[in-house]
Length: 246
Image (cartoon, rainbow, N blue to C red):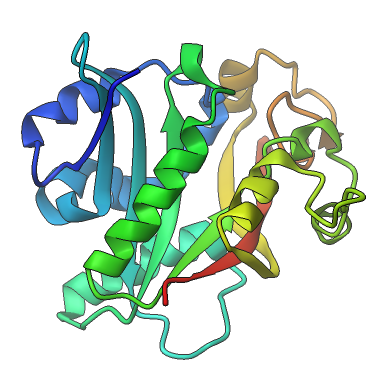
């Protein structure tokens, strides 16, 4: 594959193809309301923080990566992780504040090309772009890609699992570690998705008819269903990773 990685600022004509690229995100993961602050305006407000990878041969988009600048205002990373980064980024723009930090948000590889090492390439590109934009560190509220196989395991315990070589058991955390990332802490409420029981049935195909925890394919932790009050809430923990760019 002859790969070319550019920013959306450099290649704005790729935005439509970037969004139409097939991916494997579960439907419920696309219902986070905080995302509506960011994704609709990436092309106009955050284009230099968006990377698009194109296979030069067919000219097709094969991967995308998003980051966003925000005001951290200290060293402690927020417990609200992914959502918190987006709220803070929107607030900084509204107030005209100068961001002091940048966070990765998402790296998505075209469905048929997953498992071929492109995620590590896109992570390196995000690091390089953050450095070019003048940041000394890239943060990432990482969504471990095998955690969904252990939904009942606390994220703190899962993130601490190591192989014999000392690297994380989780493949996505391992990619970050190999790139120089260091685990800082768990963000216990990084993403929150709430919906009616009817919405959750539509998103998952599951009955959602009894109060209690529901294990949903692709979810890192169970979804809490309240059948009495007619809603269910998913609170996803992520793992904060710091990448020094010095």
